[in-house]
Length: 86
Image: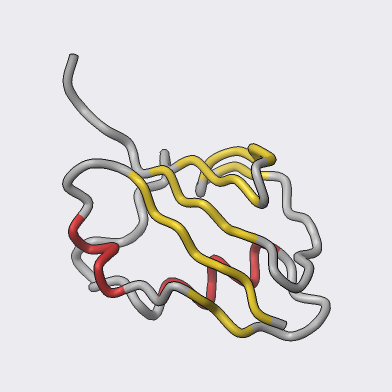
């Protein structure tokens, strides 16, 4: 199955290496999708543990603590990188 990948968050240039689409097994979980995405990040700039996760508009937690669900064809995985400042 294919899911869409969306990254938001100012200045998170490491995300430029991510694909717009990810191909996974039909019964893949959110956890499996995140593991597959790890290979696209440089070793010195991994996905921040405080990065928020949403699947098709449903907030599921952060990279360090999330509710893993089974993904479906066409789901959109949104990674919301933390933004500093005030």
